[in-house]
Length: 184
Image 1 (spheres, helix red, strand yellow):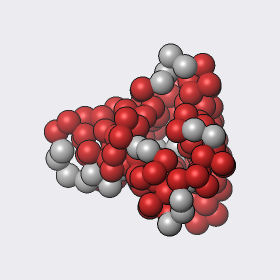
Image 2 (cartoon, rainbow, N blue to C red; image 1 turned 180 degrees about the vertical axis):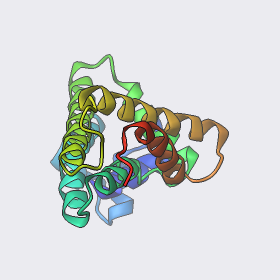
Image 3 (cartoon, rainbow, N blue to C red; image 1 turned 30 degrees about the vertical axis):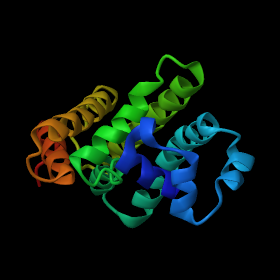
């Protein structure tokens, strides 16, 4: 799946083929056909993998950071880490958008979105408990704002290509969190 993510970033969904992916991982295309059945099967597996990746990313950042807000920053910036360039981001976004009218792909995209929203909210709740955020912070509303802002800045970055994506997301996250932080 990691190779499929990399190839998707280079080619986008329209140009990704089983033969191209097979070359990338050193297999014959028939092996991938046997495993996934078709390009659609591969893309569905990749979409499902994205949702599972959100859980693994959360577990990793939570284990690496004592501060919930530091973990939140790592989660937000790590979500699109495979987008190493504006073109790669656009290709991954094209994959997300290409099949939203297909119920199976939409379900995978919705699952990934809901998983990330859940973990953002969870980290904000932990930050409030850890006194990194004001006690009156509405973490449900803030989670939606964080998710929307950090995804929106990624789209803007893909268009204007200014700076690095992770830095832009950090700056946007800091701006959203600033009014809610406890001063020490």
